[in-house]
Amino acid sequence: MRKILVLYMPVLHAGYLRLFASLANRISEAYILGPEFTQELSPFGKEIRAVEPDVMRKVIEALELFPVVRVLTPATLDEVKDAEILTADEEISQAFAKKYLQGVPVTFEKIFLRWDTTRVKANENVAYARVSTDAFDREMADRAAAEAEKSSDWWRHVGAVVVRDRKIISESHNQHVPSEHTPYAVGDPRDVIEPGTMNLVYSSIHAEQDIVARAARDGAVLAGTDIYMNYFPCPLCAKLVATAGIKRCFFKTGSTWLDAESVLKAAGVEIILVQ
Image 1 (cartoon, rainbow, N blue to C red):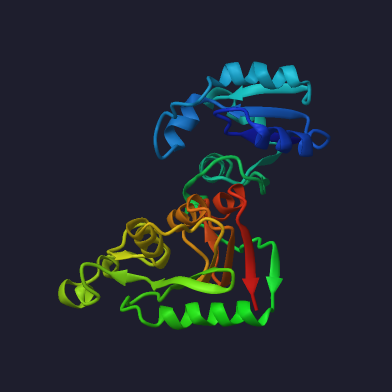
Image 2: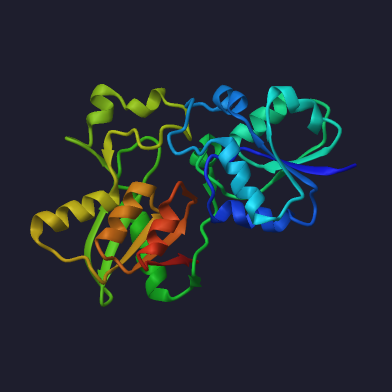
């Protein structure tokens, strides 16, 4: 059975080129989803970045990787139903396969091409630089965990300790404002939000946010310090840690989602798991 590539491809970037390189010797034809399919299946309708499929077809043809490159339309859909389909593991391709390729063998290639709903919600293991079993690092990570227990949050207790030259200069925990008693007085908005969704909707200030805010208020410099966490930072806090110039992030547990890990690494922050 012939193997063909069917792909949603609004733009061309390095991720697509890596995918093409990995498939070039395995497929005989490449099909780009036409606008009839993408406009129907995209949760946001037309994408402003998107290049017209026929223009993208010409670009891919110029790469000379595949013998045949076509735009897939409703009129040509039957051309792919007698083949084994390879496509990207992302939501539009999944939706297309589910609706239009029933009974056709489909392989979803694992590669990041763009943010979609599944990837935005996904939690990934943190790719830390190294593991520390140093006694001081353990002490500070345990201190962050102890600080976390001061939190009145119903869902998660997070603590942070900032250290310079092995001396503590700041520590905090996630806390509700204007009072720790706020969730008990008026309730917590997360009570009505499904766990794992709408992660940036909350009424508390995170431990890292509190540390950076108080440093700004007091004129304290965080550049060059280390931060110890019982949980890995969320994407917003990761940006604050990176922008504040903190150089090392120690954590005990937790996963990364959205761009938390990549933001820290781009800023040169070393990520260290404490065991």
